[in-house]
Length: 297
Image 1 (tube, one colour):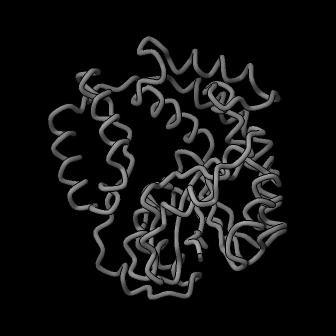
Image 2 (cartoon, helix red, strand yellow):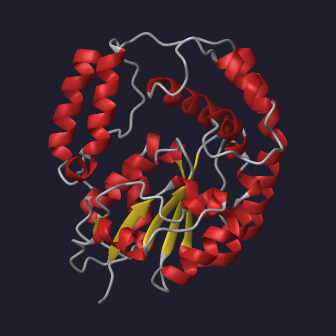
């Protein structure tokens, strides 16, 4: 029995717009998107754990009906190195492609912090200054799966992970940037589908909406309930984006708080110092390999 497995993977990175990119690609008539965005099938290898059955993976694409591409997106894959690369090459169709989306790492750090606060993972009393201080203490140490301080800064050291993907995927890897998606989503999507060799006219008149927006809630109990419901019904909502948008817009009007934590320039200055050298090394590598490098380097 032939299994439906993806041949197009968004491999990273966290808080770089991968949810929006997944949805924009999913609605293209030549692309079938998995019923769940982050399947994380290969992620256990990042932390030394075994994979689930391949049938578990395939069930998220069981309704694939012959579209040219079957898509999934799990940003954790980028950080798994050769363990995940080898498993993907052994498991997936031979000519599968990967898309890596990067974001200026200081802004990614701030977005990651806000995401954790909005998802009620961090205590409401946590400040970004304290979060930064604790995250700095983890630099150079192994990343712990359930420790956000361990991941926060280190997942922005893209140079530590990217070369393995370049060496293994070559022309079957495309690197795109959050800032391009934010500033001109249409132009970026046309560029991506031209690389995929599918029709680009689809995106000429599309209304691009922001997905996975970080939202701070007025009522924390209601927000926790909404998060649980969103997770439980993700497959249905992913396949009905218009319904999801209406529910989401209503919820934002009802429970979104406009209050946001403010922080001084010291935070960004410290982050820029931390990422200066890794970013310069990343620029050198991108130039060497013939990839476009972003304006923030």
